[in-house]
Image 1 (cartoon, helix red, strand yellow):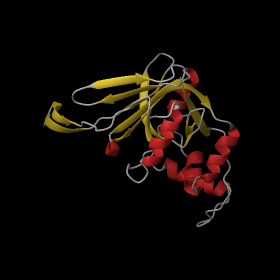
Image 2: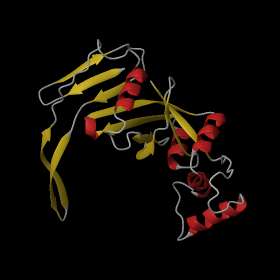
Image 3: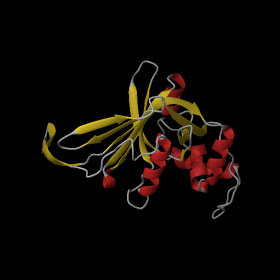
Image 4: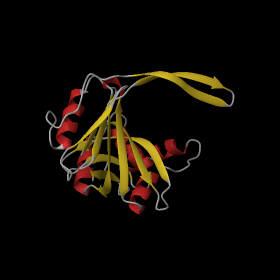
Length: 223
């Protein structure tokens, strides 16, 4: 596990338990001044945030997941959508891509999110089973990142989470082909087809919509 603290004057790092998963935590914040012209946008001088906090091996849990749970719990109500994380994957040729996904579970094995298994991110993780994630909590000047191998969660785990989703989201998982081009009005037509397929009625929020075979969870297991 790797922990670091950044400020104007210094950057210090401490290493805890070399065998533990590598998760890095950064404190930083800046308010940028933007200069724009027709052909160029420049970020000029900015103020660097100097955090009064420091990280020490004597005042943090030895298990990085325990520290993450403490931090994630503490920012509820302060940080807007703290579960939003940047997920980076790479193709088998090493070409990277990044997008925002929502963290849904953290356990002793890793970080879990759910998506379409036919999406670009899923195809890349199937071809190159490693990924990285980053969560940025601007309001408390913290950043968390992790890198590791990826694995699909069990179908039982995917079904349990799928059942907890609102009906509209369950319908969307059936109707939406992520990472593909669709025509005008095509998604609306697919939604209507799904509603007809499962005999859904307006206002029927308790209707049963099963888990699609092409949808489920991934877990990032930090190294």
